[in-house]
Image (cartoon, rainbow over all chains, first blue to last red; front, side):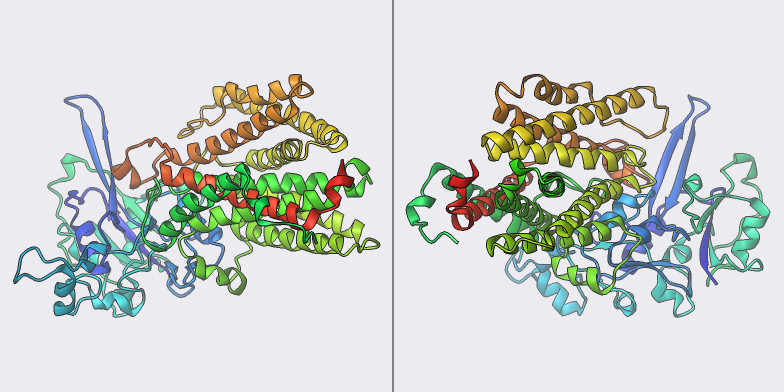
Length: 246
Length: 349
């Protein structure tokens, strides 16, 4: 089996709920978005076209980051097909970042969430950031999601890289990635893309679609189907939550 | 070993400069490694002057090693009489490069996984492995030279150094050349550039630092010959980039880059040390240019944060890492000369 994601560009409204959900679920620090976007504007008024392409790690079958990593800190999980990262082995050489054609890997130049370690109180009687973290029982931040820590550190070490894991901690519990659940328009579908009978495979079979920069031979597992066409807007949409999940 | 060294030997302007470099650069390096982030990097532009410093010094060390190996294999006495000095130079430069690299790596303590979890498909793994082997070979040769043990192992060690050092220089180019998503890097060309630049800078360093007649003449000849090849490579690249239609390629080569090497070809006999220094700076310019240019196009989602194409200027902490790398190399070379050369200094001229 091998997980993959299909993003329907006809349904995506560019709300960035996926980006925010990912940040909350995975406790990413300021300046790092595992799920982000590429935006493209083309044409001349009135025939202007704007594209919002939600991006994240493509978990490529032929991952350049895995090939480049000298310590196998970046590796392919044989069971799930995911490209995962082990911060214990990461030397912070950043070869993965240079080799990734998609710009989806980020580096923690400093200790993440440093601001939450400050001990200064704004005023007497207030909590300092550090006290808020301690009182809330959070790790790194008051809102740190402890579930993230089951497969990947909640707060990653300084000097190491990090990237999307397709919420492998949620997949292990039979849940969909946070970005898939957060999408209000059902644009994101997730499943076993190696299974021709899965929903994601059927969508690809029906609509075609392609991954980003496929000509490089990376074999990405995030497939984009359809372009936005206004005349399709009256077609019945898939409700959010239907046919989603691992 | 020379035991006649005194404290006064360290109160020279050269040593004061070295000490200043070690302190200033060392402070920046330690802060970057343990306390915070000072470099002008971001998640789209990750390899900047500190890494360039490592590549510059490592390749220069490789060039010195290659010249020495050539001398030992061809039994060229103008080179072999200076074996110890050249070994000290090569070791000092390589360790200076490693010092700069240490400030750039994010998690130095995890380096043990290079041994415990190797990835043979990674050019960086091969680069680390080959340079480690080369360092060990250099130390073995130095110890054997210090103990006066010369004989049946000299030639195999020389050949080993030639092959390992050459492979290491090519592998540095492959670190960039195997990157498929960046057109300014991709291809075998950079492996040729790094190998030739190693020879150019290594030979030039010998001319600059070992101004004795016979060795300077041989190293000068090698410098001129490799500078000609390097200038030709740059010209090929300039012409290629001028006609390239590859999308996303900015082009890193400039016709002005040929000037240091043309000057060296034409005028080396008149001012060898100055032109050797100009040649070394020219190599640094080329290495800086291709390493930075290949990262300026923001890929994918990083364009949203940093713009489609970035610009880069090194900041003061990064410049001080360059100073640190050079200071460490200079300190080790001078220490080696002062403690390990002794009577050889007279005999070498």
